[in-house]
Image (cartoon, rainbow, N blue to C red; front, side):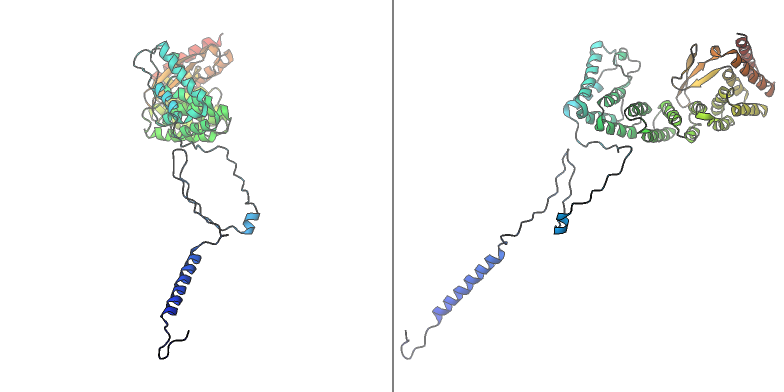
Length: 424
C-alpha cells in the first residue's frame, strides 16, 4: 500500500521483526551447539573404590583411547616367576566373630588351680571346633599368635589332659591340622615374627611334614634372626636349645652352620660345643679346639668335654687334647671334668639315639639358660672300645703335670673303670 503523499514509509515494524528473527536464531544455535551428538558415547571416569575390611583401596583407572590395533590383538601374557617359597601374605579380613570367641575361650582357661576333666574336655572341644571350621578360623588363630603371648600349662595339676604344654602349642598344632594356603601363610608369618624358640621348632616340624625341603631357607632365616635377638638379650631368658637343634638339622641336610655355632659359643658354650661335635665329617673339631684354647672357664670346659668325647674316633681331637695337656693349656678343673668323657659319657641336646642300657641325666646351667643331657655309655662299651679309651687315658696321665691333682685323680678313676670293662 502506498504511503500518503508527503509521508515517509515507517520502518519500525520491519526492524522489530528482523530483531526477533535474529534473537530466535541465536537461541536455536546455542541449543544445537550444547547438545551432544547422537552417536557420540558418554565416558564416565572410574571412581576409586573405598577401602573396606575385605577389599583394599583400588586407585582410579586412567582411561585411554583404544585403537583398532590394540583392540584386535590380545595383550601379551607374561608368565609369573617360579617361587619356591610363597610369600607369607595373609588375608587382611577381620577374623570371624565365632572363631574369635573360640580362641578367647581357650585363652581364658583358668590355670591358677587344678584343671578339671570337664574344663579340659571343654578346652579340647573348642580347639577341635577351630580345626573343623577350616580356613575360616585361620585369621583368629593368626591374630592370637601375633600378640606374642602365651599361657604355659607346665606344672599345672590336670594339664596333662589337654595334650599340649601351652596355648601356643595347641594353636600351632591346629594350624597344621587345618592346612591349605591360608594356614601355610599364617605359619610363615608366625615363623618371621614369633619371639618363642619353641614356636620355630614346632613350625619347622609341621612345614617340613607338609612340604619336605621347601621351607628350609625360611626356617634357617628365622633361627638366625631369633638367635641374633637372643644374643642381645631381647628375648628375655628364653631357652634357645631348640634353635641349636634346628641348626644341627640344617647341617645334616648339607648346610654349613659352623660359623653360626662358633658365633654364639661364648653366650651358649655347651649348646655350641654339643652341636659342633655332632657336625658331619668332623667339620666342627677346629672350632672346638679354638674354644678349648679359650681361658674362659665355661667355654673351655664345654669344648674340652666335646673333644674328649670325639677323641676315640677323631685323631685331630685326640692330638689337640694331648698337645694342650702338654703345654699346660687345660686347667686342672677342665681336666677333671673331661675325664668321664674319655670313659664313655656324652653331652647331648634333645633325645639322642643311644644303645640299649644307656642311662641319661639332665643338667641345667643358669648361665645362658642351657638344658642338656649327659648320656652315660660306660656300660655299653665293648672290651675293644674300653682298651682304646684306656690308652688315651694313659697318654693324658703322662702329659699332664703331677700338680694337677684333680685331673690326675679323675683320670685314674676312669682308668680303673675302663680296666674293669676291658676284662668283661
